[in-house]
Image (cartoon, rainbow, N blue to C red):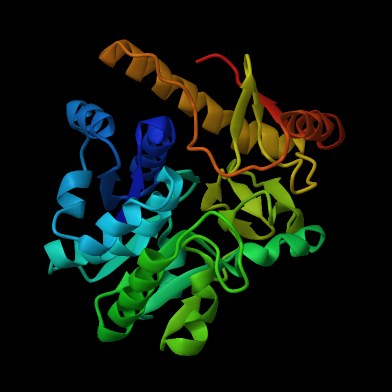
Length: 330
């Protein structure tokens, strides 16, 4: 089975985007990945790498003739505009490639640990597939950003899915900001009513899909005799590295402190350390090949907390939840 994926990122997220690509190369027999390059630098670097199984989309080609996106771009931050683009990117690819039957959007900070075939078997012939955050008990109060996570979204080429995508696009063009309101948050909270308003919406159940800090406390993480990571009895398919930040030197903040989750040795050694090693290797290669200093620097989200409060909270997370990971050499 050939998987069709799409994502987007700018030069600040190049290491994560390339880590996603390499994880797909390792675990997917056949796939194609469409990448919307949010700036010219990203396009130039990816084009220079000449990677197989990807298709690059220039931001100017994506935006050409799209008045709704153009207007939205003028009244929101860069990260808010990126969120706005999610439904438009899916529709853009469906329009350009009429042979496309099933297309999946994935966030650039996702990393695959095994073949996603079980997910596609679960989707079967569903029109739309979405996945819940599955917040752990101690994180239920953080569910204000939506029941479902935009990290994985699958759409089939049918009238029902297109109706959903077109409505979602109109909603995002009208309002897509990095703040929580009653029924809105970025591009994500709009998903809450999809199972009620659209047919054949499948909510993914595989526990190894979209493992993340906000839900990992729900499961026992172990390793089987073959060395594969298990989430309960299910193999880990992909981990969502949302919130991972470089702190100083080789220290990285996993964000686990925010979700009050203590990272175990297995999670640190088998999930975070391999991912950070991959990011460092990618950074080193990009710096050497393109003679430019690149670093892991995600696009900024709004944070109204004072800098001192953020620092104290980070240190508290490091001490109580051991939420840091030390990146080891390449």
